[in-house]
Figure: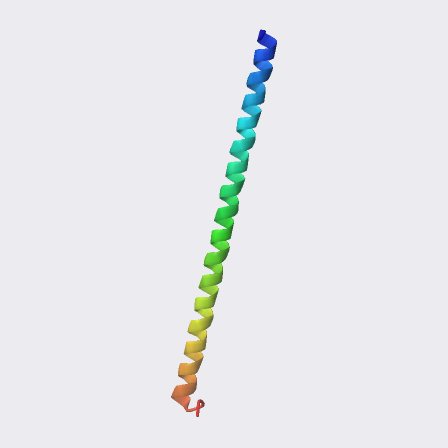
Length: 66
């Protein structure tokens, strides 16, 4: 293998490694976004439940739940 072929081979190796690293970073970003979405959904559900509990407490306090 001459110097030119060796340089081309190394450039190909570097390109493949960069593509793989980019793919890994995209996967990590996707996983982080999915986790954030799930956390937001859970927080929203908890807020909804607390609001419903508060509304029920008010109804009970004023006798509107009878």
